[in-house]
Image 1 (spheres, rainbow, N blue to C red):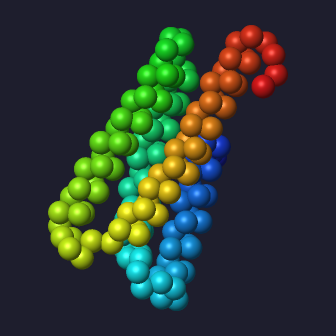
Image 2: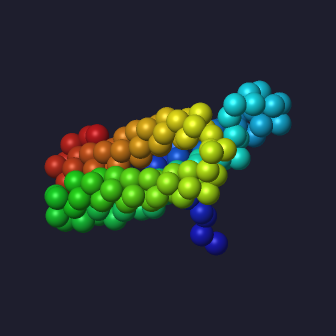
Length: 140
């Protein structure tokens, strides 16, 4: 029987997702702050996690490519994909919620976006540096 092994790049994203979801649910049930809509935060966190997993898959595929430009294209493509999906989701939320929209939750989700992007790009660069080190015969 084959043992399931999760790549390290997915592990960091999964750990961050679980950590942030736990913190958000803890704040929600403790009713920490009435100004923040924790349901919006949780949905934003889930959407960011899904988009980061898709982007990470793009980076892993690009790291296996022989074309050196594939990695740069994967970074740019994942950035644009996330940008369009997340901006569209924000506009849909603002349109549906109307005047009862929750700006603090949107700004917190923007901060989560930055953290997810940093994690994703850091792991993508480590994938490429390991590939280059293996190709050159040096240690990464």
